[in-house]
Every structure is written in structure tokens, then in C-alpha cells.
Length: 313
Image (cartoon, rainbow, N blue to C red; front, side, top):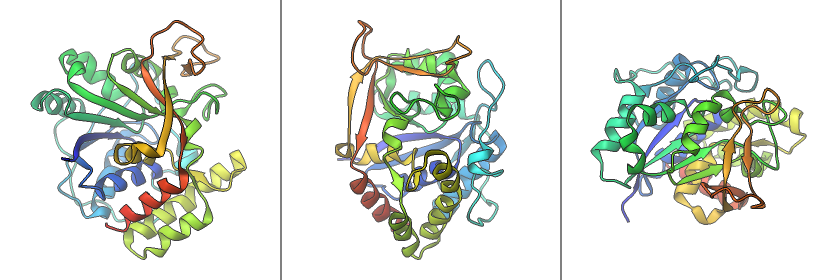
């Protein structure tokens, strides 16, 4: 089977970096057409720079990187340096990138790329706020029905919120964008905190990354060393959750995941629950299902896959 064509939309972020590396180490499964950066974990200039750093770390400088929207659709940008550090990739000491960000705007790249391919052949993989995707859908509604699938990291139900009591960070940063995407009619797969909090980088799993002895393996171990201090303190867990690599792993090994096809609505008007993903997990409403909401993961299988693919880079 031919590799699945994907566009990674991202705001790196250490876990974004690992998600990108997993994709770049899996060319028989996914073909990365490009990486589009969005403001989120850190401002846009850093997320675009970080995407280039990751490509260079992987030795994949042929992957084009595009800078996109520098702020949400209708509100001020909220960032997460308290989790990811001032650069977004704090932890390892990585050189400044040599490769340049493309001149084309990320939204234009998204539109042009989906239009240039046959309908149902390009999957969009958002790892951050959905601003770029929603903007592309607003500017070019003809591409909506051409997108094969959106597999995204965002939201929560049983795990509630990680940036407010009710909201997960990616959705909270731009709930209006998320609302547009979830109402678009595109086939959506959601990796919420409910599943990503089961993908914990325990000490043995991080030791396995470091034991690869490669620049990639060591950098990934140092990234998780850095940001796990926040998660361990916050959640009292045995390690840091690797949120975004769940998206890439799903594209490669969907059998590692289970979930339900349910209705998911985005709260955009409440100060108390702004950005909440109101997931009808128990199907208690008559609202039509619009997303596959993932709830569980084979964590050992996930980390075996991740370690094996990182070893290729």
C-alpha cells in the first residue's frame, strides 16, 4: 500500500517534535507533504523555527516548512512556555536551523496542496490550535470535501482540562477555529487527553530512547526529561504524557487505539467552560456523530513503535 499523504500542522513543542520525528521515520507509512506552523505552545516565529530544527535533527531537510497564523481567529494568543520552556524545545541543546521557512503562507500551502491532489488522498494532522485549518476552510470551502481525514490532538472528556478546569490547551487557544473544523463535515479522529495521558514516558521508556545513542534518541530523551518535571508535579504521574505522537502513531498503527464515533461540540461562549470539548461519550443526545473520539491506547505497543522508528533516524 502506498504511504498516506499527510500535512502536519504544528506548534512545536517537545511532544510535537516527537510526533514529527515519528512521521519522518516512517516513510513506508506516511509521506509528509509539508509542515505548517501555527502559534500555540510558543509564538509563531519560534514554532516555525522549531519545525526546521526538527527536520534538520532528522536529516530531512527536503521537507518544506511554512509559517501560518500568528494569532487565533478572534482572541489574544495564549502560550505555554510554563510547560515547554521559552523556546518551546527546551531540554536538548540543538543548533539553530540552516534551512529556511518557505515564503508561502501555510494557509495557502494547505489550500493549494489539497486542491492539487485527488479528493480523499490528503490527511491533515493538527498537533496544535486549529487556526490554520479553520482559516483554510474559510478561504477555500471547496477543499473541505477533498480532505481525506483530519487526525488531531486536542480536547478531553474524562480528563477534563489542562489549561482551565474544563478545556484542553489546543482547543482553548482558538475555540472558534475548533468549532469551524468540528462543524465542517470532514472525517475527524480526535486524540484527547483521555488517551494521551495513558501514553506516559516512564523512566524505562525514556532510557530506551537514550540508549539508541543517536542524536535523535538522545534529543528525545532530553526533551522528555525537561517537560516531564511539569507533568509529574501537576498530575503525580509516573512520567510525562506524549500527546502529539499519538496522532502519528494512529496513522501507522490504528489497531493500537480504540474509541467511539460520537458528537463533539466546542464551547465558544462561556467564560467558565470556554474551549471545552463537549463529547457525547454516552450518546445521550440526538446530535449526529461528527468525530471518532479515542479513549484508549496500547501504551507498550505505542512505545515499541516509537522507539523502533526513532532508531531509523
